[in-house]
Length: 196
Image (cartoon, rainbow, N blue to C red; front, side, top):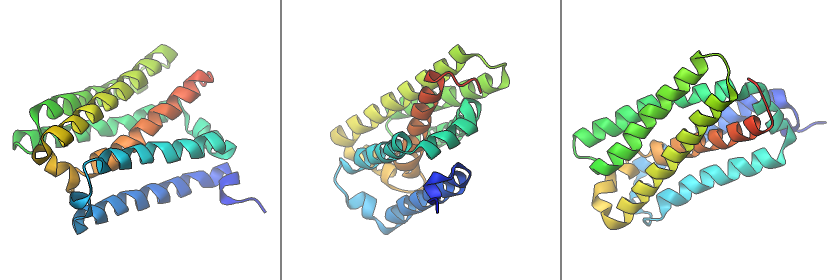
């Protein structure tokens, strides 16, 4: 009998379940105060693990790769439209002094542009270079935003207190990890020449 992971058609519900459990775990940890009690390295460690383990699963599981190939580059790109909402959260927290202005600029403006570029790419006829551009920009933005967040976490921890509280805790420890993973998968699909 084939396992759940050997059947590509079953991957979607499994992925959705795992993502829901992950988001719920981050939410529970934030509400319980566990995120505020963890060391400074905790946020980047959780984000890194949230990229590393899904990519190991993707690299080692042909059925998972087949499922993402069926999802396609266009839908993976459309997923990045969520970053427009994330930008709104950056701007709202920034307007109230809840985040360092540099992080609001790097994270908020970058997310807004990444989301808009994703929508533009999906709305236009498929062009591989355009999708490469969207995913390169989006991945670079996440690296800059995470770098900025890590810098302020170590140099001015008080300014980053909201990163460990809801709703913002879901951005770095869930959204960034899932989004960066989606970029890496899109790079793989584009590298393999997938056209849609």
